[in-house]
Length: 80
Image (tube, rainbow, N blue to C red):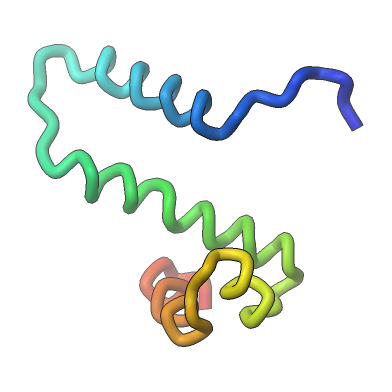
């Protein structure tokens, strides 16, 4: 285990968004909420599924979703 201080997820998201806005170079973002959710949901689901060793019931409970909703999301992200 590392002795490095933990960086809160929120801070990492803020850094990523700051970099995103800097890289726009005058371009105007459209539908930013959907863009961010689409970028975050897939990796979130993949990491949770790894964490629970593929147990969908445990993953659903951790995420606060029904198992059916989890399965729908996993399918949409090509994780099932």
